[in-house]
Image 1 (cartoon, one colour):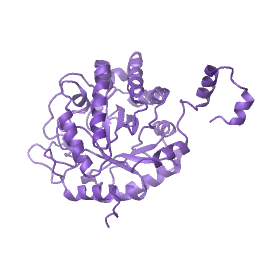
Image 2 (image 1 turned 60 degrees about the vertical axis):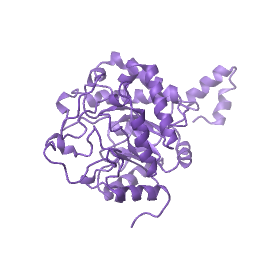
Image 3 (image 1 turned 135 degrees about the vertical axis):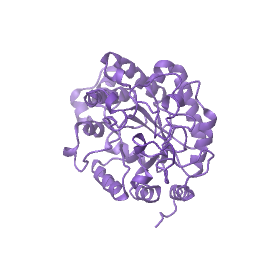
Image 4 (image 1 turned 120 degrees about the vertical axis):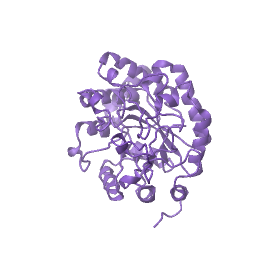
Length: 383
């Protein structure tokens, strides 16, 4: 940030335009990561963020959620009402660049409808712009039905492999980022922008053979541009991209992708599906950056990450907590990751992996709903 002394040395700008140019160059208007002070001031004005990664039960992926033919406000309204009923105040929601290319005006209109529904339920979403997970060949139009017994069998990447490998298509990605953020840059209904989910995920165990061979290098080069495109719209909401693997014990131990994420994120976000001891260690490692922290993915019951132990820890550290999955549906994320190798066709697992509600609105575990409701209302954490 440029100092008042430095401004005096530079001399008084002769016009408002030259003043604006000077401020822009110094990062006072846009173009720079928020200062720690600004990020922490923002967080101090928010309720403790608690929510879920949201996809309506009637959609298999982001495209089916948002395309005009399958956009389902009634289901969204009903399911966000269940989230509100247990005290949740945010949802992490994935967008997709193909939806912008298909129909920018219609896509913005549907986002506005979604935001109105969410606001009625006192929920402010974290919107995700790009995602490196699952199918690298997204296609507009009707989406295939769920593969029986398989976790998240229809989720698609954004951008897909073809666009990622073709820099000539990057102006379309820029138009999407700036078009969406520009339309909602000062919208108080939005909590934050997550610019890229798990950018260096190569989907070992699912689509690894279909991935671009140099995917990580391509994303590593593109991610800083995405942050810059987003920041050029000067959003009032913070930008972030969550770290999800590796050693975060010191900045020197971060890999190249994690450095880009940390150095460009206004608030720190991360994923953790481990035991509570691991969750706590990860939080304490990230505290070195002196910024607000939100865990934007957790809860994998079969892997040791459960509401009962993780959410009280998150409240203790004042870390936001967004579990994966709200209502069991076409995504089938109540099935474990290993269903890609061993589909659960003949029998269901004894314990749900993700998700909180049955399609009829009953909680999978009433005790989980009680814990979320109690902790978000300020009651003491369970012993």
